Image (cartoon, rainbow over all chains, first blue to last red; front, side):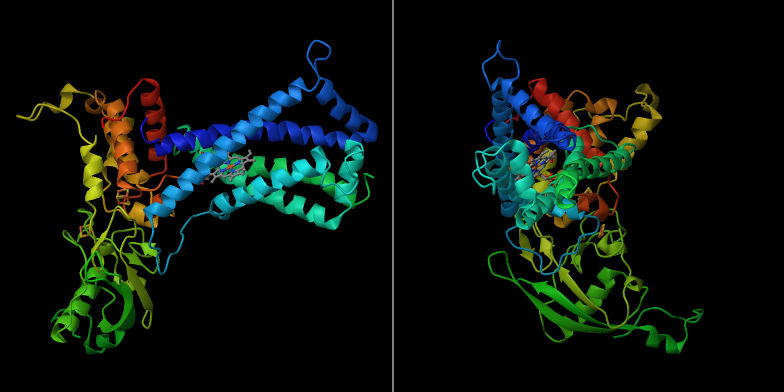
Length: 220
Length: 271
Ligand code: HEM
Ligand code: SF4
Ligand code: FES
């Protein structure tokens, strides 16, 4: 295709988004190990790193997941930026007065919200994966790093804001991906939207219980 | 200004003139495509609530002509909601506060003393010709790229020779009510023409007569709308909510579905 078709870009966005979404489900469930105590959480972290050993080299599973996610994030951002620029070119002169009739807040914040989520992912990796931006530092166990982060009110606020934005991103994203992949119709529209709201809410709640537990002193 | 209602049998008596509205209009004036336009304020008085929006603009134009000013250019033809020629942004909404065409919008949707902003559709593939009139030929080129079926002309075929399931003919008819007004593009935050193109793809793709060209149609029409410079669809839904014919978001899903199938089957744009 000479000039990449705008619908094709949306398909790239939808497929990469769904891959990241599947990861987010697994990641959320993994995080809940924190409620089984420090040992269980650290063992889980160690298990991810040693999965398949000795048949497979260390970190095989993690490396595969990381490559898939990096490719997904880059593809997703490429499509998002291309469509953003296309939209800017399509309306260089803005309306003096413009009212939206049905546009959801979630769909309005897809682009800037996406950028913030992207920045958050970088911070999150530096904080809890690599430890470079973590109060407890690189030598602490995964569990201690997690507790240290959420005992810091600024870090906790960043997590909460980013997660709420992510929830809204997914609320519109799930509906939009269903349309993009040609799987919606008039009958399903309500169900798809209700599912998108319920799914995004549950997923984000699943993430938020962890910082909430630390802040409330249930986990320390 | 005079109002045209009333007459010997009218229940509306003389005092009805009191019902006329006084309005402040802020209208986009741009004398040709190459100059910068701006909003200009006008006052109209004694506007009857029974007038259509375009009749209100006619009143303004008569007033401007009397004063020796240039009347406001706006497009219109049938004035009964079927041709798709009319269409302006009214207080930030395509075709105004009701889900209908600008010609079928009535002044009873406004109140005395209201201030109304009137702008042209804004999208780079729809350049302003003058004031509120825009060039929508980009839509014609999207149609030429695939919005047709190839059939021998001549005597109309016997209607029963090609049966169409009721469900399909109803859905095709719903999509076929698109009048090509461009409100979907105007209302879309991305200035995407997806709803228009999807209406055509749905209409023809549901009919047996539309099958031979189905894959090429969707690939070429989407390619053409990209070439014209329309934005990409992000499924916001402003289009469908602003469409005077209520074309549904389902048509967009159907277009995407057809497009993916066509690309998989190897269909590629002509040019
Ligand atoms: C890296 C930062 C990100 C940016 C810049 C970004 C941006 C965008 C944009 C602009 C859209 C299109 C919105 C629309 O259709 O109106 C979108 C859609 C979507 N995003 Fe993201 N996003 C990001 C991260 C994520 C993440 C982490 C996920 C995880 C699940 C995700 C999942 C989705 C899904 C499922 C869609 C729907 C695809 C579609 O529109 O058809 N995004 N994203
Ligand atoms: S889809 Fe609706 S808004 Fe768009 S051109 Fe057709 S009739 Fe007008
Ligand atoms: S003038 Fe024909 S639809 Fe309005």
